[in-house]
Image 1: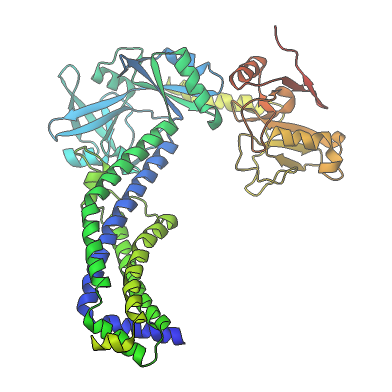
Image 2 (image 1 turned 180 degrees about the vertical axis):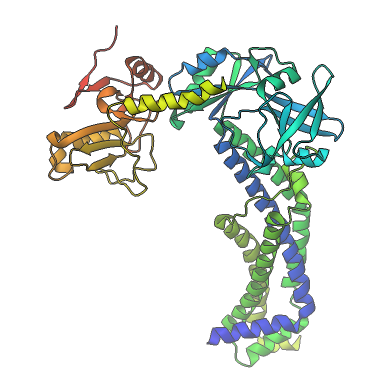
Length: 384
Length: 156
């Protein structure tokens, strides 16, 4: 009962200084929003990349020439397929295409109509020569839909007409947005890839424990290749998103510092009025513990409110409003940006870390000066 | 080309139907190893199964635990005897398929560890077993003759 009364008094005290409370709350909320949205978005992008890669091949084998990616002869597939533990080897044909019309890069991929995890929002996958399916970003950039024509310039500088048979939607739009899927042989001709060559080989492995061994064997048997395991890719994606997130946070570090100064100044600088208040409270019989409790409740109420507001705002920004500002910096450099709508996800560990980092220092910075004032003689405090 | 691709799964289906013993079903989420008590489902590439004539089925989190139970059945599965066993299955290392234990070879002492540490790793075919032994620093190659494990003489 005693504590509830103190809490009541603390809340009333906050409301008695609306200007100061509102100022701290606004700055505090803003800071938490920025911090949370960077962390939430980085986390969401990483999760999305991981989910997507989980369906990809366990191993990708590239040919290298003078340390650069080169076309791989399809017959190497047989060598790899003979390694025990390899389930299947599929030569893949894909590449990048710069579209000068929309000033954007597209990813052109040979269709695998039999087994494609990609979902279509409308139409079907291309089956015949001169057909293609496009990602939503390409469809929007070129203002085309099903049954429209997509004209691309091939390797011989000749315009090639593809009829759009379908538009992709995928759970993760991060990867299918700039995609154009074309039947295998048509894409080979388009890029002028010689017969018997492929961009890379996708290797499926039954036992996840054997992937590293198989990668080592591929490297030993085919020294001019570079086997890339799914774990390598995951690590790379994590590193890239972490790096971008880190850059963002570094930029915001100055804002963080500014807030710290403001909070410190607002919270620690007990003005004469507050000192008097503490003095009077002590004079009417509050002991030091009660005063500290009062200041603790004040700090906690303010910072908890700011944290919850900030987190909610960041959550809405990242998962519902498509990340207005940060998104462009974090997801990539291409011109066709997917509308980011990452899958909402609350990571309790991350939330607890953020709460600890923002709430504890603030509460501490309100309690400590109060403690100093509360331990001094009330008579002296009131006289000042 | 398309038609032959469509026919391929059908052909595989026919071949699968011809094989004498159907693969036992995968363990359920709450299935526990009958020897060590650990959950079996998180280790799909290690599952081993003992099937009994009365239709009972016991799952293990590795061939090692399965053999521990098999070699001393009454102690591990009360009231059971070797005569009642109708099928012994282990998960083949390279294909992660459940195969009858008599159809695979077991490599001991390798650096591939199962949920319970050192394992008898099941590999199908003499050549693959030899490859596995070389790749993963294995020691001996054993064969299961329906009653016990016997060492296979190393190939010259």
